[in-house]
Amino acid sequence: MTEKKDIKSLYLPELEQELALLGEKSFRAKQIYQWLHQKLAAGFDEMSNLSRPLREKLREEFELTCLQAVDVKISRIDGTRKYLFRLGDGNVIESVWMKYHHGDSVCISSQVGCRMGCRFCASTIDGLERNLTASEMLDQIYRIQADTGERVSNVVVMGSGEPMDNYDNVIRFIRMISDEQGLHISQRNITVSTCGIVPGILKFAGEGLSVTLALSLHAPSDEVRQTLMPIAGRYGLSEVLDACRQYFEKTGRRLTFEYSLVSGVNDNLDEARALASLIRGMHGHVNLIPVNPIKERDFVQSDQRAIQAFKNYLEKQGIQVTVRREMGRDINGACGQLRRSFLKGG
Ligand code: SAH
Image 1 (tube, protein in one colour):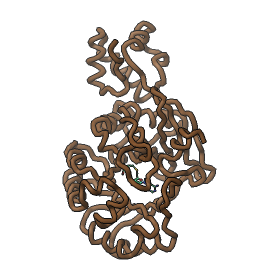
Image 2 (cartoon, protein in one colour; image 1 turned 180 degrees about the vertical axis):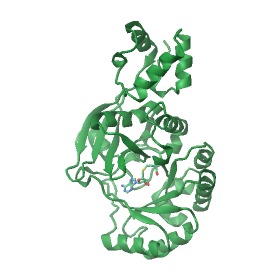
Image 3 (tube, rainbow, N blue to C red; image 1 turned 60 degrees about the horizontal axis):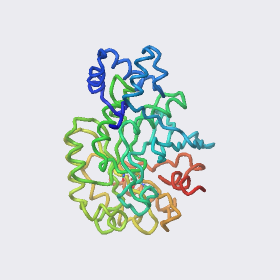
């Protein structure tokens, strides 16, 4: 038996082709696409303008991805929601919904686990389980929008996983979530965060998309960066930053540099100085993230004084800086921690 096609991962023209093979007209494909990507149908039975035999045929031919929320934690401080979703094969992933004054934002996972090995990150401890399909990335947003009843306007691909390590599915996801026949989320409101896989960044620059690229920088020298991120041993800073410059030149999108502050590792003023000279003249801003300690490692968050001093120094150098607001502190746990504690049954 051949595997059923994943209907929610198909672009509209692909769905039209598939339906043509079943002897159906292209307007049927449009109706189905709308059910899946605008009305956020959770099953074929909801597709009430299709005949029962057609729905039956669809069920035989296709698989319909629909994530099951197995846990939702809601912050009493700011309403942030952390969702734990079960996938069709039993794996679990997490996604976060945050409410900002400029709209609702969802942070999605791009892989089950991760193989990048960043030292401070919980998502990577057990390695990579598998890539997520486009439909599994889309459905994190669909299920959350259906649950909250509010339109999602911003998407950040900053949950578990390395998007450049699941390149084709991530591109498909971006095109589909921004498709006007779907939720039509503006590409300008989508951010993709990478640990710095150079060939991926260069290819991404040529896709004709206008999404924001965030680079996980975390240190201003290759030496310190390598102690935090194994990928830094593969691609040096000058090469990574050069790829980012090309990304800006091709897309015109300002860059984001993420910098997680770890006490005594990368948070002193010498590092702020080195960081300023490293990115001077690049069109981007720095997002400082007080490191979120995970119990498997002994990294310590920089204290408020160090964070402020680091920020002030960069600002004096004319660099735009934000300190990431800790959303949902009461339900927190760093990226990937909710999933880990779920898997360990605790
Ligand atoms: N793989 C992508 C996206 C995943 S994580 C990347 O590396 O960019 C999103 C951001 O959170 C990255 O900058 C990552 O380095 C950072 N991060 C992961 N765990 C963290 C922790 N415990 N504390 C602070 N930042 C963390």
